[in-house]
Length: 432
Image 1 (cartoon, rainbow, N blue to C red):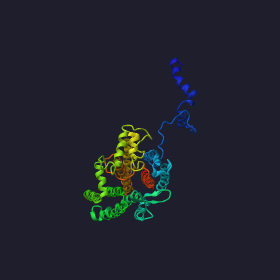
Image 2: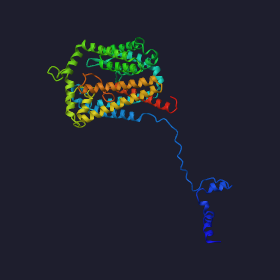
Image 3: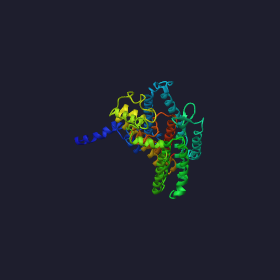
Image 4: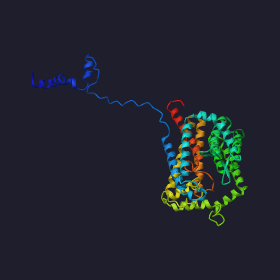
């Protein structure tokens, strides 16, 4: 054999000697008639693995985190704003932890109620809309009955329930948004006709307004009117009709203010709170809220270091909690709080629009009603504390001290989380 032939035979000899350890040997053996081996040797499958089956991701964790952040921040600020109240003879019998413990209890009860509300399908809420509205009306009547309703500072708005004082107007906000959403679903075919589409809803809201003004609680009536009008607009009522309704509502509120001397004085005090006539009267709260915000400057005086909460600013732990936040956390703290409420309102409205896009009109309109409620009430409270709006007794959602307000805020958020969960379930091919 020549030298060239010997070199040519080397690869074949090497394959015979070491072929069993080379890649593809089993395929060659099978192709040659050999049996296929039970396992693949010296071979790696580089194919992309199959995608995992899609599953529902559960509740909206970002929305839940923002709500928890507001609750925790509010709890800290309620304690900060109320810890010195026992030094006041009016609260001399209270311990420094009195308002903190009651606020924490309200959050616990609200969390339990929210967990239960989350278990209820939105279809069931739609069936309960009318009975809940009637229950809210009944409680608004009951609270006006002497020896049942509890009066504070000349207003009769609370029903004592032992562990907390329940405010029927908070239930009325939730009941009205459910009722308005159900009403628009039932009246969808006549939404372009003013009297047939709008008049019955206007009567219902008017009845609620009369009962609220009898307490009196004009702030809650304003929120309810905005919720009802917003749902009518989002439900497709003609824009010209909507602006006509808005004009009538504004005129009605103006008439209520102008015909009531006490409310007129509050408007005048808002316009000139520093005057000698108003500084120690109707403008007292506003002037001290502005002083608190001014002391806070950019970064605040520090947690717990507020001076205005030391019996200068009335209701610092309820309606004017934002002023204490501004004093202790400064402009940065107030701006952060506004950003949280803006994000929360926007996210709730997105969940509602998504439900409407999935042809779940009631769920979508009701969720957007919750967004209007939280957004408008926080806007009013922040505006009042900043002196941009006349003084009005509305709490800051999720933060101000108040048992029934916290309770119904958490139930409303649980309803929105349920709507979002059902949206995700349907988009992933499941059934609600």
